[in-house]
Amino acid sequence: MLIADGEPSDIDVNGSQCHVFDVGKTVEKNHRRGIYVRCMRLDPKADKYVSCIFSIHNSTMVEHIRRLPEKLPYLYVRLTY
Image 1 (cartoon, helix red, strand yellow):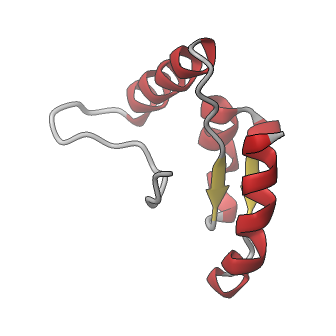
Image 2 (cartoon, helix red, strand yellow):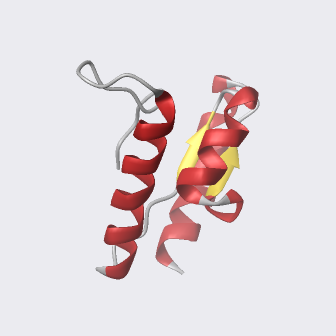
């Protein structure tokens, strides 16, 4: 499990579209290997890049950080079934 702010960035490459593409390819490669990546996001404005990376079906919006403890079991179920 990786917890991060979720916005793809890199110090040596300009242009966020490159980052979105790179992270999306990594998610795709892992999926082919049987490693399933899901996203829990806090930023409601992240829909565009999150859906490009994970698809809208592999992403869950957490409306507020205080709701994270109730959302984590949902993520666990999504990852294991």
